[in-house]
Image (cartoon, rainbow, N blue to C red):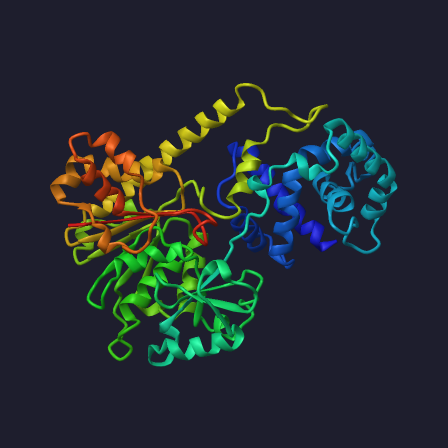
Amino acid sequence: MNFYRDSTWVLEFLESEVEKKGRVSGSLQTIVLSCCKRYKIQTNPKHIYAIVSSCWKYKPYLEKIMKKSGILTAIPNKKGKPAYSRLTLLLLCHDLLLSKSKRIQMGKHPIKEYVLKYRTTLKGELVKLKVKMKVSDLSQLVDTTESGDDITPVRWIRINPLRIHNNDTSIVLKELLKKFPNKVNSWKDVIPGSIYFDEFIPNLYGIHPSDKITSHELYKQGKIIIQDRASCFPAHILNPSSDDIVIDACSAPGNKTTHVAAHIYGSTPDSRSDTVQIYAFEKDPERAKILQKMIKTAGCSRNIEINVGDFTTLAKPEQFKNVTGFILDPSCSGSGIFGRKTIDALNNQKDSNTEEVPEEDDNTDEVKDEQLQERLNKLASFQFQIVKHAMSFPDANKIVYSTCSIHSEENEKVVIDLLLDKKVKEWGWRVAPREKSIPTWSRRGFKDEFKEVFTDKTDEECQALADGCIRALPKEDGGIGFFAVCFER
């Protein structure tokens, strides 16, 4: 019963977010993990994610079936209230009708017995619905590209030199090769038991998502860190030395922060001191706790100062005159993140408590586009302010701005707005050339975005601006969708 109870809490949270805000923020994985922590859930988050994701995908159809069966109208009362939650019943009906085993995953319990009393009726309504919708299976009604198969093709792991004696990463690599003896030449060839040596990021390796790495001692000891390849781009592009002072302005959960630390201290094991060279800012107190834990696990607590609050408010340029570099990965639409599609599907769902399964009207796509555009504009404005504030720091000479978004509004257009800004021009910032931003990575920015605005520039100049930007497509490039650009002066 704990599994369904815990999953119900997550569903209740999702519904409450939609009711209060009209939409849900973040990826489903993030939401599940957050709920597990909030409610002290002991159930495996992966199991909760699987059933919650599937339930939302089939929710309009399941609620239609449940309503027709009468299961929702005959719930017994307990102390004047329904004894069983509507969402818990949704979960049980999902497993009874749509799971592979077609069975409810619990022992003897009154709520299970209640649902099983309606088993014949529920299955009958399922058959009727499939006939009415002219399908042999409900999966034919669900766009699998929208919320299904929404997982990374490769699990990327980064060796952390800060937890290794003399920063000798070869020691950890030998241990990894014991577990993954089959070396492959492309991430596309990764299968269980194999490992890929990434060609773009040092000390980064790709393994199959089904391989259990979190139970390995190397992971528990902080000697390896799970981090998507594209997420490693910012620190790699910034490439700070032992003389640099860096601010990570939107730092939780801390992967980029610890990667910056690996660059600053990873090659100088003997000269490392307790001097703070990285200032991490995180607005949300709960996320700041996650950041603190991550930094401790990675072995760089003494060199990182965590500031809880808004970067643009707390960080005054005159107080950080010696800061030379920035990592800026502000809140974005998350359109390139795995698990985001499930949430987008939820956000776009109409009220399904109607007699018929909802159908799209002629204006639905237009309304959705307007809502998305409004949200992207708000995010872009916020992102612009974050980067511009960082550009005002007197000694800063290098800034890496990134998002896990595939939308140009949050990417190239933010870059363009910054380049057009009077203050940014006065401060002398420009887009760093391709040779300074992983030049061998083939997928670059959109030239047409620059060409449309900078009509006074040549085609070659616009291409150079686009080449200074990096793009990664979700799945197609081996991980999440991503954008990164380096500014320098």
